[in-house]
Amino acid sequence: MSVSDDQHTELFESLPYYDNDLEQFPELKAKVEREFAREAKPPATLHPRVPPAPVLFAKQPLLQAELERIESHQELPRLDTLRYQLPAPAAPGTDEEWQAAVKNAQSQLEHQCIRQTNLQLLQTYGANAWRIHNYLLESTVKQTDQALEELKQMTVEVNRERKNMQTRLGNQLNSLETRWTELISNVLQIELANVALDAEVNRLNAREAELAELVRK
Image 1 (cartoon, rainbow, N blue to C red):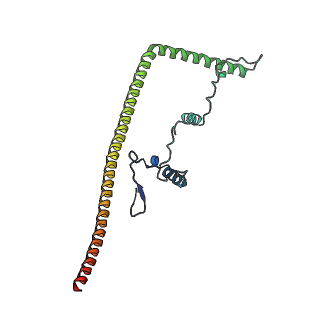
Image 2 (image 1 turned 90 degrees about the horizontal axis):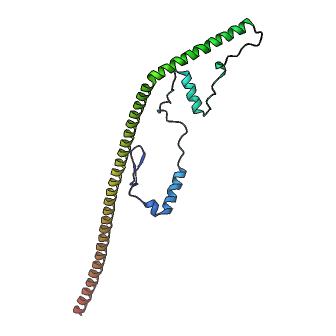
């Protein structure tokens, strides 16, 4: 059923949980599919009122580059192991090359010291921090699952209410249609009876005229 307003816009109303005309009449379903095929395709661009997509990590170029890498399905670059090596300059080597090698050795030594410190901190506080992190994650998962179940339940309730309402309205429509058919049938029967009565009246009038003519003779 379509309803038009003053601006010539159409609103289509139906009872999808109750109407089964498409299943009962395959030719009608084929016509509907042809109508859908003739409809204009949705535009490729969004509506002007739709806001543009937000720019993530605008102030974090490294995170933004990583997000772009993931979106483009590029592989993660391999770990650069050259920075952890201690190459010695080729003999005899210049002073600049030996100074660079010494600086590299100092950097590697400092890196190992930091790693040792981090391992000590991890052994001391890592277990509890990890337990707290896991507890927070489990709490978040429980809240998310609960919200998901509530949303699913709400969806089921809405669909159940829609189905019940449409079934009730469909039964009312069928009852009204049946009543309308009965009333039309009664009207037709009354009209047929009126036609028969008119014919009977005409026959009686003609008989009366014949009898009156006989009496006068």
